[in-house]
Image (tube, rainbow, N blue to C red; front, side, top):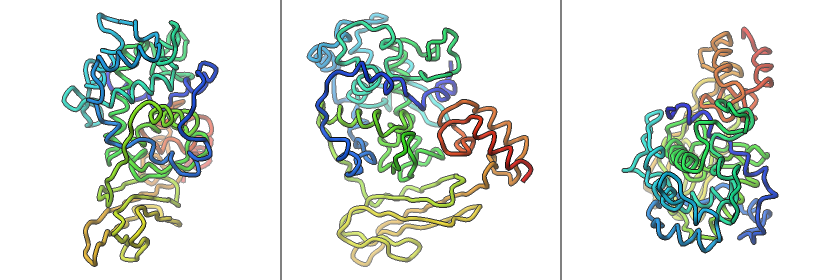
Length: 377
C-alpha cells in the first residue's frame, strides 16, 4: 500500500482512549485543572524533544522496557526485538520511510524521538507497563489506522488490515507523526502552527509549535489522549522548552469560519503590530489577535516585530474564506462539491478539510445535509 492509503486512515486514534480500563494506576505530573487553566494543551512537547531521534539507543530502549516490566522487553518480530523495531522506526527505516504530498521522511530525516514512540505505545495500548501478551494491544499498538468503520478492514476488527501488527503499527505511526510535523509548517491547510481549532472533546486549542500540531492531528482530543501523552512524557523523560520566537513563517488558512483567533510567541523585548497598529508591547512573550467579520475571499494581514524602534521581522497571514458548501472554491455549490464530499465520506480529519462542512472533524450525513441546503447557490 502507498502513503496515500496510509494518510487516509491515520488522523483519529480513539481506541486507546476508549480502553481506560487497561490503564495502570499513574501519578500524573499535572492535574487536569492545571493542564487546562495553564493552557498547557497548546504546547504539549517542544519541537526539539519531539525530533530528538538520538535520545535513546536500542540498548537504552531495551533497558527501559525491562525496567517497566513490559511484555515488549521479551518480544521479537521478524528477527528484531521490540526495542530494535522502535529504534529503527525512529530513524526512518522500512515502512517509517516514504514521500507523500511533497513531504519526504526517510533514514536521512528520521521520524521522531523514540521516547515519543514509547509514550504513544503506552497512551494507546498501555504496552510499556503491560506485562501480559494481549493480542489486541499488539495488533493495534500505536492506534494507527484503527477506528470504527475504517476502510480496508476485511476482518471487522476495527483496524485496516494492511497496518495490523506491532512492527507495522510502530513504523507507520512514526512516519505519520513526522509527516504531521512537517505538514504543520505551511504545507497543509489545517493543523498549522499558530492555528486555533476546537478539539473533538470541545476545547479551543492553539498549536504553538509543530510537535503539538502533529500530536493533535494524530489524536484530536485534549483529554485523554494528549493529556496522557503530556503526563507520561514529563513523568518518564527530561523535557525542554521551545525558545523560538518572532516566528516569520507564512500563516495560511482556508476555512468557512469568518472569525479566527491566531496566537504566537515573541521575545520579551519585542513589540507586535498588526497592519501597522500595535497589539502587544515589550515585556510579554506571546501575542494574540482576534479577527472577526472576515469577508469571503482572501484576507491578508502582516505581523511586524519591532525591537528598539527597528523592524526585526514580519509574518504574513493569509486567510481565505469560502462560502459554506463551496468545497472546491469555484464559487458554485454543485455536483463537483458533492463528488469531493463523497470521496471523503466517513473520514475523520479529511485531507480536504472543507469537506467537513460543520467542523465536527468527520464527513457524514450532517455535512451532506448542509450541502443539500446550499445546493445551487
